[in-house]
Image 1 (cartoon, rainbow, N blue to C red):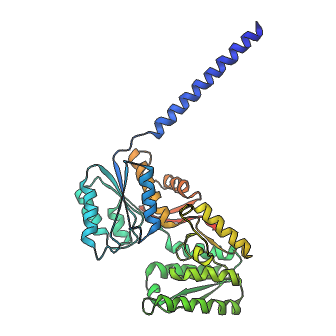
Image 2 (image 1 turned 180 degrees about the vertical axis):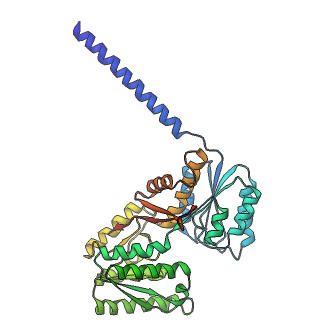
Amino acid sequence: MKKMKRLVAVLMICVMMFSVAACGKQGTAKKEDKKIDGKVCVLTPTLSWSEDQYRSGEKMAEKYPGVVEHLTLPDDFAAEQETGITQIMNVAKDPSFKALVICYGDSGILPAIKMAKKENPDLKVITAPVWDDPYEMADVIDLCIDANWNKRGQVIAEKAKKMGAERIIHYSFPTHLKMEEIAQRRETMKKTAKKLGMDFIDVTMPDPYVTSDGATNQFIKEDIPKEIKKYGKDTCIFSTYCPTQDFVIGLELKYKYIVAEQCCPTPTQGYPAGMNLKITKDIAGDYDAINKMISDVAKKNGVTGRLSTWPISMEAFQPEFATEVAIQALKGDIKLTDIDALGKIAKDVTGVSVEMEKLDGKYDNYLLYIMDSIYY
């Protein structure tokens, strides 16, 4: 009889536990199934112009069918401004769209955004990024996000020191050094390097905007070996020009210097070509797989710990992150200016910490970010 009572008691406890668990699951389901107030339009460049941004926009449309719509802007917005403005205004005039995410790293789009906000003041506009004047952007846009280009100068120098560098060689050319973001990043990198006891050496490359990519690339291929022979392998090489990254990474495997980051930090810049990696369709966009491939090549060539970058492409991160922010804002789960909430979303997207700060420390709708690094 006692055994029977114990059995009944155990069964009753099991039933109660199952009921509580079921209630818990129902509660979670209600939270996950919370309705989104309206649709989100994500505008990116075309596939041919920026594959990472385009694929990221596609990914979000597939993740949120019927809620997220992915459209593209013209490759050359300035030359096809009328087409671009029409696309943006079509979204503003459609009452089903409650948020517009624009991921298009170029300038000249702000006037179209102003027109859209005038047409539909309730439309939430998030740019990630648009490179018009940041202070004018902050007056109009609900949320602007961009990489913290200036602070990257500090971070790159600090990483280089951590990786064993005794000096930084900074390759650039006049056209780039006239650009404020690049000039500021260089100045910050130089100051930080000197503060940490590292030499900072400027090397001027042929200006590809005056000559050609070929001349700039050939210079890099010939000059890096000379500099490493002169200074030694505990030298961090940094180039401001994207097309040279293939050679910066490729030569590193032979001369074993340090690359703290590329000009645009991502596993897909310089590494695939420089390391002869085969990025097949089944792993395109799979950054865990790509990062493992890079680490394996680094180990094979005896340069483990002397290469680093961000763990995912910033161009893939920005559309996904901005769309997730728009979704959660429309659900009412977050405020667009809540840095802590945005940081959590960014970490969910990247798997690493993403540090965000306000523009000039005061514009809470214009945020600049730095992503934690991966070391190969």
